[in-house]
Image 1 (cartoon, rainbow, N blue to C red):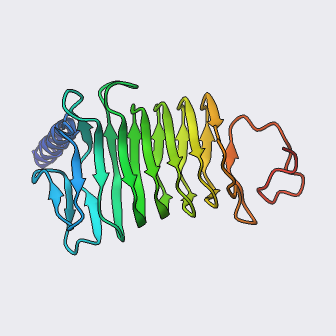
Image 2 (image 1 turned 180 degrees about the vertical axis):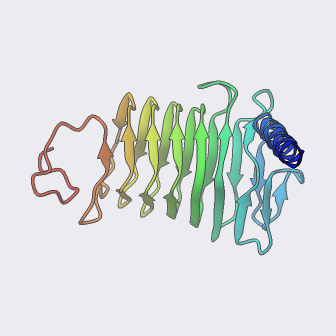
Length: 227
């Protein structure tokens, strides 16, 4: 009898755990219009899944699917000297290459870190325009028209990211002195499309991973020995 009671208890626990897992898997992402981190440190709209306690470090608390009928961008950062930590959440558009232009836009910004965010199905995943001293690290840009875009943006660090299955992995345009290293460029139709830009593609010891690289690394230092 005791063994039967024990079996029933275990079965009930398994059912409860299974039900909780199903509910979690069915959870819908937050959906709404463009989210702004304003120059005064406030966040709009008020129900956006981004929190901060000090107006320096901002954390994304839920997946985000932007409303394609009313918005051109998912998150626009208007404040300098901050950290935006995605905490491995996903920012997505309903369909690749639709009306929504950018997942993240930084324009005329400086001293910002963007980390741990996955962006997918946008025209541009992460966009830097006229921005300097920005660090982009630990992010995933997948299934976008352009994974990472730099326009007239200098002296930024793009390191430790994954750009996968985009039309263009990374697109520097009139952008110089950027440190772009230790990233994985995987299966993009065009891995890099650079225009009028001179940047650093290794940190002196390691470069980037290119899924279509056919050259050699004879000394195993992480930097290709043939172009």
